[in-house]
Length: 197
Image (cartoon, rainbow, N blue to C red; front, side, top):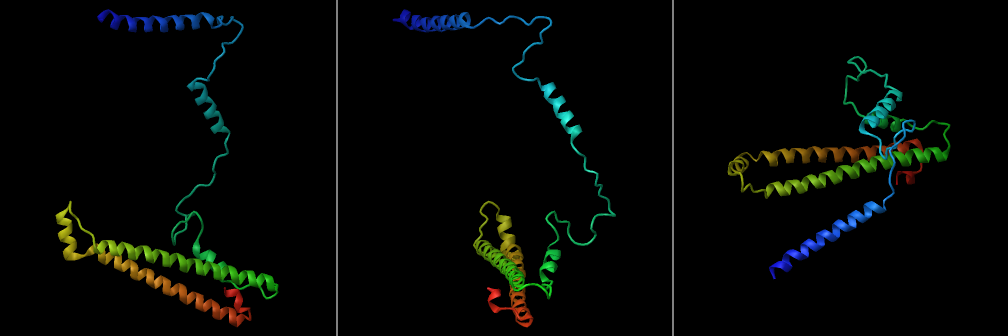
């Protein structure tokens, strides 16, 4: 019985060795490259890839804009997308008097759509803030009793969240006032009240 246990793995090993040897005999023999013929490589070396990357980097155009304290805007935040106030001022400018009825309608509809989108965004943010406030009021700190004691006395998390909610409510009130002012402006300009929808 013990001989059979050792013989079976030995047979498997010999069979695998024989198959590997047979595969090597069936493979076409590769001749070494002749002195005039360059060696064929299946993949470029890492050094070649690095050289190519350096050459490609040299041929790329370079950014010639240099930023200094003199040419960076001093007031407001630097924004990649653009200044929001500039976009609002452009939208607030009334359409020219010689604009066609279709151009005036498009102007007012875009302006009202932007104002409504801002109001909807602020209302959604307020909803999230109120949910966070509900969570904070039920917050329990089982792993940090010291923090729980501090929060039970000072309620700093809840107070901070409440101040954010009050600010967002003020923003929503301002958005609603802007919509009302735009409706008055549309009415005074002689536009169709349906453009506000």
